Image 1 (cartoon, helix red, strand yellow):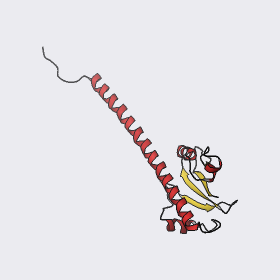
Image 2 (tube, helix red, strand yellow):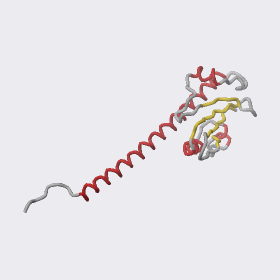
Image 3 (cartoon, rainbow, N blue to C red):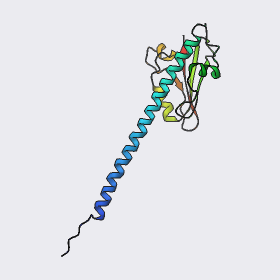
Image 4 (cartoon, helix red, strand yellow):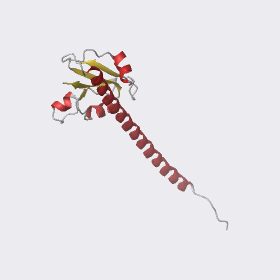
Length: 153
């Protein structure tokens, strides 16, 4: 009798199934890591923008001099965010002693995640006694979602 040396088809299918599960898990973890890195970069960019605006316009009584084209150049931050959208800075129309940071171009899940983050030192976060995030936005399935965070007095 001759002995077979090799693997059966069932063994090969089992090995391929295990490799497929490991690959799917790896892709999910990589995707999660990329999303967390994007969120961290957005938070760092917002902190830099807020510090820059306060540094440039802190001597004035209000923030009505905010101009997107000059402010981003002055604080050395790009107005492009890691989600493919943009950042915008504007004076609060209700209170010129406050300014608004808008983050545009978010999908629903990223929008929801950033709305839930605690935006320390924002007006909403401070006035709620650190119980609310300080960001507002309507996160929908389709479209270009935007969140707003208000800073100032």
